[in-house]
Length: 96
Image (tube, rainbow, N blue to C red):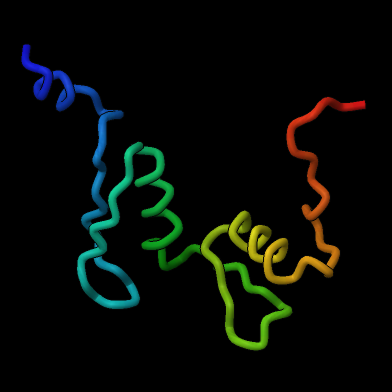
């Protein structure tokens, strides 16, 4: 079996391309992911119209996110002076 045939058999092998329509532009999305899980997450967060968006209550402009982890990252970067749930989450290290 050739290497290309082996790659085609392996469902984890990318690229995995989104064939859905971009809801904002109406054009094909064509986003590319190396893992099937990332494509599935993308389809669920970007192309699922029923999924609830999370909103930054501090931004003057309408700032929404498809995932809560993106809002948390936004809060840490754009509003570092504000205390919010999840801000002081431990990263790595040992519990003590």
